[in-house]
Length: 297
Image 1 (tube, helix red, strand yellow):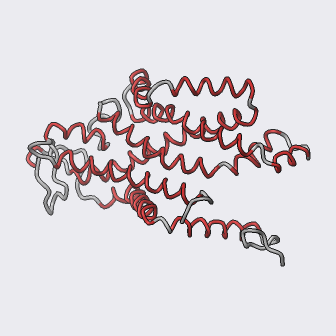
Image 2 (cartoon, helix red, strand yellow; image 1 turned 135 degrees about the horizontal axis):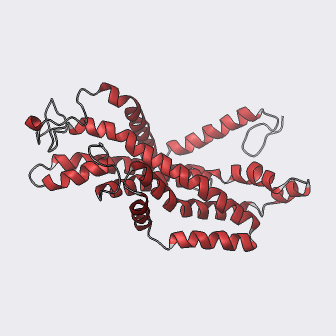
Image 3 (cartoon, helix red, strand yellow; image 1 turned 180 degrees about the vertical axis):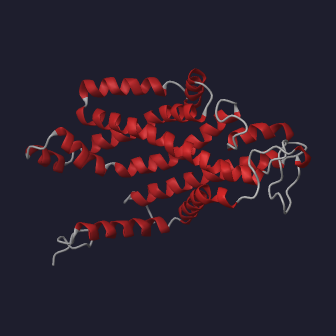
């Protein structure tokens, strides 16, 4: 039985070939210990976001001034804020909000940016010129300033923050998709498929898009971290989630007034943001190395 370059038999069923590819990818990913730590942290955060609120004993929004500004203890692990609310409970309840904003905004950016980039890179000429000039207009504005402008127009809410962050994520996905498409469309197998009579849509969605998905996944992972940071910044400025929502950026904004006398009020929400963003970043770096066949072990 002949074998392909990858060591998988040529006539091996597709499912087995895919499994072998996943195993090879995981072996490459395991070599990056930091990426594994980031991946395990992300899995932990997702699990906590789903089941964590069911195991908390305090109300995240109920005000109790008799318990305000308590330092960390066995009863209140992260202490309480200026309204007597348990900070640990609020961080647990804020985790689903943070992850929801990060994932949803990136999905919006990818759903719009990737098709724009693929069509621009595939057709080129006038279509490429028009689409890329539109992307350049978005790139002309710093991302956070564009998000602030959009939220100011749309209104203060988590939904509008997602829309704003999603919009400033579009250029990143469009650029990645365009560059990858331009390199793939020049390959021989694309010419062969076109010679066999395949339509442009079939070539794009059947042969080009599956082969450029790796850099898009890496970009999405890193972009989630950027989106979470931007959304937290908007909430910190009072443009995102509004009190008493336990969103981490809003908690950090409220706690900054007590940073010198009661630093725990701002410390723990800040640490939560830093940890999640760092986990996404190092996991994204690990994915990039694992997907790159030229990367050194």
